[in-house]
Length: 380
Ligand SMILES: Cc1ncc(COP(=O)(O)O)c(C=O)c1O
Image (cartoon, rainbow, N blue to C red; front, side):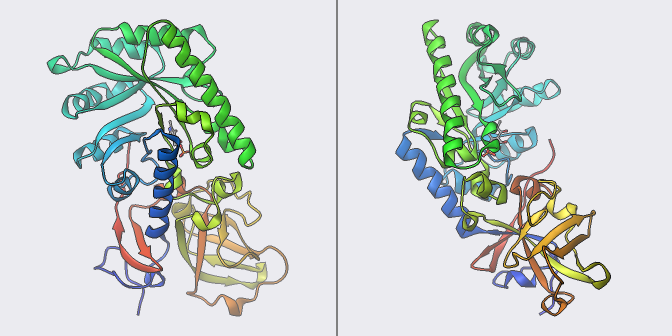
């Protein structure tokens, strides 16, 4: 059977090898297993799971991650927030420093949903919220973003401004302090479970100490930390938090396996590519996966270059342009008979969030047979 164009009729039941390449394929059984493990882990820990939608941005995966409730999710763009709200999701936390240009859209979502929540890390943002009261006496539900060592958004946990801002949120009319949100993205610098758990412990301890400070001034609200590494190997104290908010775990990737969050068999995503050229004068193959289908994430620093080439530990994805990739052996001479023109190679991405962003359709399979397509939302 000839490869079919994505979108050109149903290919359900066909093997993934029939797909036109490059194509992103998602193993739905691995997705379900990863999602269920996180649900079970959080239940054991006694903490509410609020899964992040940023990795896949699809309804189907949102359904799986929430165990079908379509409630209690976190998003990183307004496009995601609107997409999920339009399709029956609720209790959505837009965990991005309140974007001033999108205030009106946030107000509309707050007025439309049972629970839409925004995130604030600056008094200017609070001022904007207080100047735009919501209809019918509804409050703005606000999370304070705390920086516990990640070094990105958020008020530094140790600065007096953090407590002052929390108090200001709590006492501003029309605004409610719903919780404190600290993202431990610094777990991405870890290698192995011990290092991951040390960062998880530090973030948890700093967040819980901040919650103590809040209680001392009469404020009670929720707390949330998380990342895929920390929530894949949670520490006991995370059970004292109200919520955790990991996202990437549903797909995982090579990066997560190197950090120690998962095993390679937990990675649910692949990019299929075909050999389109033989270049014996350079001891290379040309493939039809460039950065437009994989992303440049990882900078080619893996021993196998920009991705792991499944079943071929001897090969390296050396470099890419937009639509072409150069593959060469790690050592020795290429055996071109093993890679005829048109043959497939399977790439395991370094960072699945970045790779998924490059695709407008994900081909879903079970045991290598196509079972459907997922269409992610895009934009900001
Ligand atoms: C603010 C915020 N919360 C939660 C997450 C989810 O973390 P992870 O991708 O490690 O699962 C991210 C990821 O970048 C994030 O930026």
